[in-house]
Length: 507
Image 1 (cartoon, one colour):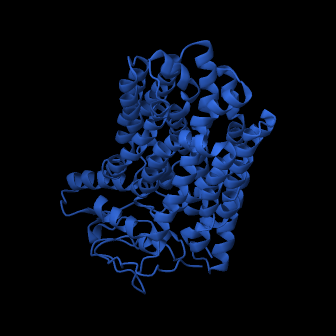
Image 2 (cartoon, helix red, strand yellow; image 1 turned 180 degrees about the vertical axis):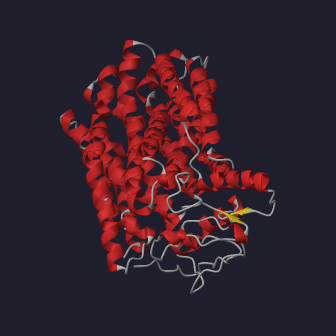
């Protein structure tokens, strides 16, 4: 099973990309036979070849190459003790939950916020929520490459404190304009953990165990925006909308403090470069170089991503699903207030369908992990032990069909004002489908770009954040002109059109 080169697809030369795995994973033409590395470099793992320990960059001082001391070198993040890796995953997953939670926690309080700030425009009310996600579209463009140059730790630490500072400012915002600006800046800071956390999984886990870590991160990123509105409804009802931000500050601030004190650098490229600098000084050998020094520049990686049909279409698929999710976030309160006469406090419960999946995600999570990893092992055996990143995509078609089912179900139930329980139940398949799409696609990007995971993940992150920021703005005129039934049916057909995308690349 291999990807086919798209018609008219430009070739990428060895000069443009030193990582042959990136070439094969994207379906871009690569030279036959062994990939020739420049002098003073060691072999790196290649998609389309059997995985082995030979691919680990090892020390070779005779060739002036600095790598790991041995295959089981404890300094290599993939060889860290389970407790050390687990603690880092807990830190990263916690912040990966809080950051997207900040995007939706205030969704139930749109009306009270507009009233308090003397704003009447519903479009600005929706923009207040979605502008945060626009920060997710801008931040990865420079934060992801920085994490591969300077390391995960400094970028995550500084960005997390940026998130805390701007969330604090949101709580004291005097008007809608300043609130929108500060939410955008908060999203900018919060975007770092969204892009970098999947790359940390690639730092810590080998291919055959990567789905587990990816599932934890994907589950955290999915759980945050789903739980947020439920908590936000009660906070706004019993306190005020400003307290929603101050509570976020307490959560994000305490997590940022833990990250600052206890997070370890996990980027192998950065760790080896530190080792090179140390050995140059102690051994007096300025000619020493890192075994993995041959990185693509941000410009070269972006060019490779743009040329890749699979990355483009995966980005469109995930972006569409993400945009539809945020459209539901911004419209659920209004729909349940107008269709069922719910109070602000009860409105938060309208997210229970999505939230049930959020918590159910961690129950169903391990079944999906087991199945996805088992599928990879099975397909590798059928492919003579050769691993291909596209093997991760086998489950996406089944999960993708749940999105249109959910949208059409939810739309017509609310349009005809059938019992509210059926309306909430109609959102359950959407949450299942979202997770079933998001996890394999995110893991695929880490598998396809192991040395550039943060930058590679930035591409779909930017696109999905743009969709999440602007697609919800179309909801008011859409529902006004077509109604909830036909409006959501139209959205369901859009989601249905995305379902065949993985089939074009996985066979």
